[in-house]
Length: 394
Ligand SMILES: Cc1ncc(COP(=O)(O)O)c(C=O)c1O
Image 1 (tube, protein in one colour):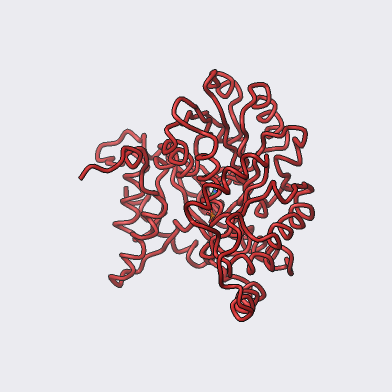
Image 2 (cartoon, rainbow, N blue to C red):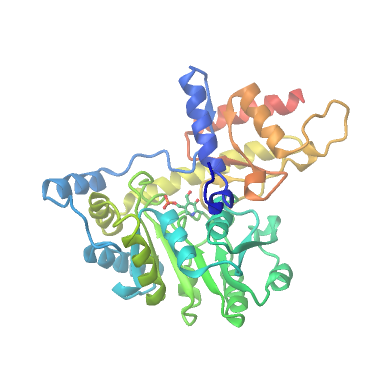
């Protein structure tokens, strides 16, 4: 069978693949510790669940406008004003079936063959694929691992060509947890502005920064109108399965995304849209409580990793991932060292110790492994015990 060429331009999601691998092993009765999850381990708060039940009882179970209900867009406006100090008009907002859908649609609306799009390495696994599927080319720019993975600006300037059309910022970052300083964001936007590039600001972890206040890219650079702001209910409100995300920015781009959505998914789930209204404008105490728990776990896992010989882990400023380097172990020149890559180590950790993680190669970083700490302190400690035991054996 001959499938369309665009399918060959994309890869299956490595993180989702590890999640299903963990489920498979668990189904075989194995004592698996899953450190690969990309979602909070908390349940959706009960006020949000109640709002969904009320929506169903009140008959909000039908198609909505393709780009989301007016009421939800108004709730998004309120949220953006309250948390991010930014304002968008209703025709500058679109609700999608998750932030991923929003990002995919925006790439479809703006990029095509011949275009180049800047992505910072290490990157979230989906960014290159969102770009490639449009026919455009992802172009990778280096970052500084010791400085929250902020851009290496010389490399950024060097990689921009007359074909560059966009640049994707993701702070706090998946997979590194890195949070860029306001200056780094401003400098990146200034460079983008001087080449009239579209700036995608993926802010899905905006509520999860531990040592600095988060400032939205558009708040920092409100005089540049080619910024698209992407946010999501998934991580902030433990609503990954509800599939609600949104994009705000230029009304022509938003309307193009709406057109695409109208001819593909029709509209985001109606019940989830009502739940999202409650999430965005109701009681916010859950967010602070979850963040407190993540902060404790981050400190725990960073300490554990740094106490292991050959492992270095910088303190990530946000999200719920650590991205330690195993460079010393991978490059260790001793006989019998059969760990030649992060993937080898990651697979060994899975096969010998039943700990699921995601190797750095899928994020464009060959010496690192991503561990998610969206799990209990007990699981974190047990997984770190197993990693330490493995490292002592090799
Ligand atoms: C960096 C980043 N952006 C966007 C998303 C999309 O999340 P969702 O589609 O659940 O809103 C994710 C999810 O893992 C992510 O890590």
